[in-house]
Image (cartoon, rainbow, N blue to C red; front, side):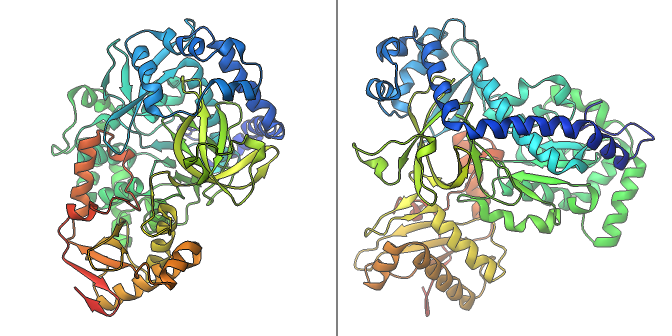
Length: 577
C-alpha cells in the first residue's frame, strides 16, 4: 500500500498520517538532509555534472567535432563549444531521431522518446529523452515531492491528481514516441507510483478539451484527492468550473456508475477506465448533493481533503493564481519550479513563493547577465557567481544532448542555499518590448496588470498587452481584456492609472520615457466575451501542445498583433474611442 493510496478499510486518514509521521517522514527527512548537504557544494556538483557529460559523449559526432577529448577545464569547454540555440543543435537531433544515437551520445545511451515543445513559429522542437536524462529529471522531481510530503504529511492516504500534457504527438522516423515531457515522465514511471494517481495518464490524450476535463472530474470527484499538480493556474480554474457547471450530471454518473454520453472518449481508454467508472457510489453522490444544498455550488474546496496545490505561481501567468482560493479554499500552494522540455531546473522549497533552488546534480548551468546576452562579448557565469537581485539568461548542458543551449528563460537570483542560487522565473527572452528604449518585460506587465486587477477586484483571468505605434500618435501599450472584465469606462480609467503607476515603479526607463512624453499612458482594448477562449483553441490546434501546456503571453512585442482581433472599443484616460 503506497503512502498516497487510499487508506485501508477501517483505518482512518488521521491514523495513516500518524503512522507515516513515525515511519516514512523520518526516512524522507534523511533524503532532504542529503540534498541540503549537496547544495552546500553546489559548484562542485555542477562541475562534476559537466565533465561526466563530456567524457560520456566524447566519441559522439558532436563530441568529435567540438574536441571533447581535449577538454580539461571549463575554459576549454567554452572555447570549443559556442553558446547555441535550437537551430545549431537541430541537425544532430534530427540524426538521433532517425536512429543514429551516436550523433549526440555514446552507443551505450538509451533513447526512450522525444519530448516536444513549440516555438513562436509553431515549428516543433524535439528533445531526446535519454535514460540518463530521465533519471536526473526524476531525482529533482523526487526531492520536490519529498519536501512537499514532509511539510504536508496530511496528504498521506489521499490521491494525487496530476494534469499532464499529451503523450501521443507522433513518432520519429525511427519509431520512437513524441510527447510532452510531463506525459513522457509519467509513462516511464514505476507502476507502483502510477497507482497513487486519481486518473490514468492516458486521459491527457483525449482530443476534445471538454471531454478530457469531464472525464478527469468523473474519475477524480469520486476519489479523495489531497494533492493537485498542474502547469498553470488556468488549468486548475477550468477543472473546477467544469466540475461545478456539470455538477448534476457528474453526481448522476457517480451514483449510477456511468459516463455521460456527451464525453467523447477514445474506445481504448474507455475500456481501461470502465471498471472504475462502472462502480456505483450512491453514498459519495449523496455527499456531493448535500454540498450543493449547503453552498449552492460544487467546488473542490468542499469535496476534497486538499493538502497542497502545485502550479506555476510566478512569471507572466502567476497572476491567475490569486483566483484559486475561490475554488480551492485556503489550500497552500507550491510553485512547480522552473520546468521546461529541457529539464527540471529548480526545486521550490517553500509554499506560496515563486522561486526555487537550482537542481545542481542534473544539467550543468551557465548564466549570462540580462540584457548582456544580446552581446557577443557577454560575461558568462557559473552557479556560485550570481548576484542576488540581478537577472540572467539561462544556458544549460544536458544529458539529452544539448550543449551550452540558451533556453530563452530570464530568471532573477533572489539568494542562495549553500552554493546553489535560488531563482525566480520572470519571462521568456522574447517577451519584452522596446519602442522608445523603455524595455518593458512581460513579467513587469503581468505584475502591473495583476496589481490593478487585485486593487479593483476584477475577475481577470486572461489578458495580453501589445505595443502600439499608430501614425501621428505617441506610442502606447494596449492591454486587451474581455468586456465583462471591465464593464464601466470609469473602472477602465482607474485600471489604466494603476497599470501606468506600477510600470513606472518597476521600470526606470519606462518612467523616464513617460515623463518625457515619448510614451503615452496605456489603454484598455475591450474584446467580446469568449474571444480568449476562441483564441486559445486556435493556438492549441496550431501548436498541438494540448490545453494543459497552453500559456497566454502577458506581452507580445509584435506591434501588428492587435490586428488579429476586432475590438469593441478602446478606453483611454478621459475618453472612449
